[in-house]
Image 1 (cartoon, rainbow, N blue to C red):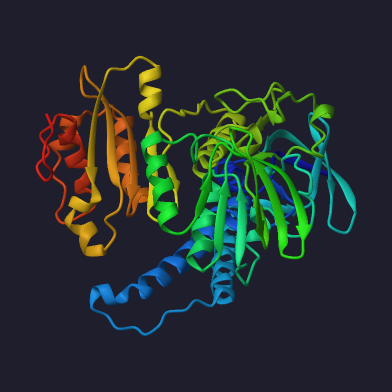
Image 2: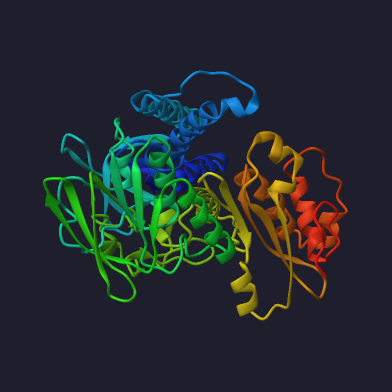
Amino acid sequence: MVNNTEIVIIGGGPAGYVAALRASQLGAKVAVVENRDLGGTCLNRGCIPTKALLQSTEVFELVKNASRFGVTAGEASIDFAKAVARKNAVVKQLVTGVNYLLKSSNVEVINATASFTGKNEVELTKPDGQKEKLTARKFIIASGSVPAMPPIPGIDSDGVITSDKALEITAPPKSMVIIGGGVIGVEFATIFASVGTKVTIIEMMPRLIPNIDAEVAETLKAVLKRQGIAVYLNSRVESIDDSAGGKVIEFVDEKENRSTITADKVLVSVGRRANIEGLGLEKAGIRTERGSIVVNEHMETNVPNIYAAGDVTGGILLAHVAFEEGKVAAENALGHEAAIDYKVVPSGIFTRPEIGSVGLSEEEAKQVGHKLKIGRFPFRANGKALAMNESEGFVKIIADTKYGEILGVHIIGPHATDLIHEAALAIKLEATLEEIANTIHAHPTLAETMVEAALDADKIALHIPNKR
């Protein structure tokens, strides 16, 4: 029996390790229980490894197009196994960093699986099967999420993989069908298409990444098609079978027309679900809804001493949201008052070109009754983008007509995931189109597109013709 721990955190991913660090800063004796590697899905099987692979493919594309910059580099090729090895090295370095942070903060890390036996106690199962009990005054559940698997016949067969397994591939397949056109699906499509895989995306919804602005989604679809990626929307997969040529995927479109595609691999990318199996939540009396733990804005569950944060709560499944939720959970658990504010949550999608988004989409803004001013500025009219040979896409600013308050910004283009944070701060501070337009931006930079888009909302852009 291990006692006298003030707060126990179940899970060492983004929500868990940040909660542990914050709790330690506040003077608590903290233990983190993690049955895999610290860093969770984001660091080991999600955000970081995919971005490392995307960077390798971006360099490959740059070298292939070196002649456009007046550079002679010979015929470009990519050693995908080396790219995967580099990805693994990046992950290892960051995992080591998280270990160091927790150790230097005097956080005890326990390699085990935790299951509640009551509201003040969990049973730990170590890798060797040994069990022991751990009691604490407070608990934070941060066990994350796992890939969702839809009930499609044949989905459990060899050759059908999740995003976890896709990151272990060292030789790209000749062909791949991706079931699901969300963020994970389009990022993997970008990776594998760049290295020669014939990629097909099958998505049930009318557009890719359904929660982003429709105009951006339509542009993304066109970009992916130009990259050789086939996209089928309003389509559902009915079955996956084996054949001499690989996996046979049967799907139907919105008119119930049936089609089949044969591919070497099938990547299932239809979302993620909260990882609550085996936690013994019922023994602690913790309430769940639709497979996720229910919390309030303070990250409190219905049990006063138990909190939850990150993907396990079923909210916005983004690592930076989990960071904030973990911090808020730790502060409330230790007697401080903090609340989570979801009004301003930027998101980044690492296709080529990238997508950055924050605030309301055009459809959402109209649905809640706003009268809108919308400004757009294409990257093809931006000097820095042209110099970089990355002129595809645009910046779109959505504002309310009454005061010009910025409601949402959506970018598809070079470095969109970096540029979006100016917009996030603008929305947080309730900035207006005029305030963006009157803020001097350095030239030549990609950020100038924000000024021009703000000006375009009032039809006074300087570097594109104005349509009145």
